[in-house]
Length: 289
Length: 289
DNA sequence: GTAAAAAAGTAGTTAAACTACATTTCCATC
DNA sequence: GATGGAAATGTAGTTTAACTACTTTTTTAC
Image 1 (spheres, rainbow over the protein chains, first blue to last red):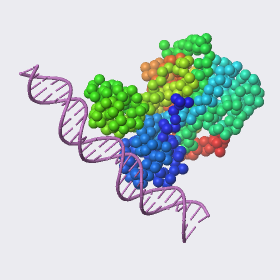
Image 2 (cartoon, chains in turn orange, green, brown, blue):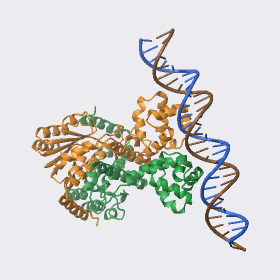
Image 3 (cartoon, rainbow over the protein chains, first blue to last red):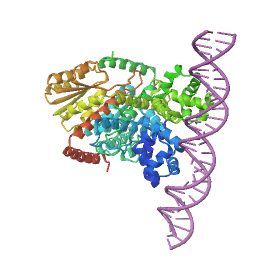
Image 4 (cartoon, rainbow over the protein chains, first blue to last red):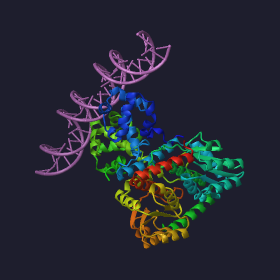
């Protein structure tokens, strides 16, 4: 996909991920960069090598190891990375953080994660999912907990999908709904881990009943992926520090936006006019006159 | 807020703005940069001077004229500017867009909106809200439609808030809940336009009953703002193109993340341990072992 | 323990950014 | 229109920074 952005754009996160496979000296450079990236953007090679207590060629080798073409390229790509987020998934929120730091870290985690998800998303798979959804007689979204929020949000997009949409809220309703699906229906099952029992079960049952099943998950080899005809892998920089918010739901919401928009655009003029009219009425309800 | 990233750091726009006041030769450099900025990021001074048909020192002078500390600084700031611009430069989604373009536009609308919201958020107001929420006996979140999704998400954060939290789902329950609130309770009312009748009413009633009211809205002068003790203004780049997704809900979700995290960090060790234990159990439910 | 490979540093070279000075162009005044 | 001064711009050279080549040290495998 020529217009998709590449991981080049999130160098900080690349450094975090590659860190364990780097040479010992390279890791010292990495630590300095991760510790104070905004400063490093303005440093010379000599300054950075001193800060990391390695030689200049070692820094050059570090640049090559992380995929940069020299130090100049490192600086440019780091600046680009910092435009998105100044912290990485490895940064914890602690009780020592003042409110400003909390605000920035929470935003940056989410920004960085969205950017990461975008760069890793397989547009061809999205295209297949759009085909399936555009042909659906009915769509049911299954999710629990944070993914339940995404499922409910997706259901609200039923005017864009252009067919009846549901999002059952408890595990019994989920089972019942899945069981009543059949040929021509689509089940979209959402779970970042891909292991939430109720969601996996719903996908399994829906599939057994003849519905097409689409999984939205962060884990390709998960039980959910195994029970779906199609998997939309939404990679996430999730980290498990106690106070780091669950960021996957935002990228899942964006994927829902994409699916609903793309399906809607498939529908043609009558649908388009109908959606426009509905949005106009909704704006009145919302009071945006 | 000294550590907030602002869209002010946008060299491309600076160049456009300053262009008419630049020297003639400087304008030739500006034209090359504006014509092909992505290339310029990777150029040497010599290459750029040739492309602009000026001498090298003239390019250096151009750098100084636009506020850069030399060519190296120009390159870094241009890279940063481009990273911002890439997320903000999209036209409306139309039926002519291929799927790749839709994917990028949807992501970029959301990314640029989060960036904007972050830069405009008043951290002092967030701090006041955190104080109020940390002292609440009970918290109820009110939202409808897309904001209903946010309210439900916020309610799910009750372990972090550390007090009972609710998010009534229909207008009758919202009214009943608001009416039963009292001194010591907090009502958080969420509406991007600030004009959704049911949400405004809930805030009004809750406030009349003695609850502290916090509004999360994109519009400072709205009816919702008028009925709240405290307003968290979450600015949004919302646009009303038919197929541009409702991006405000993502920034509202991030604000909920911030509030819940900050309140949780206020609670102390016993709460901290309790949250940790709960998250551990939840991870098991989610299957992340 | 030994040899080979990998890692890392020193020394030097090259390229790039920048400064100093000279030349050209433009503007204001008569 | 001519002249002088200021501003703009370029040439030439210097300095700095990035990088390469080779040497030394450390690590790994047998």
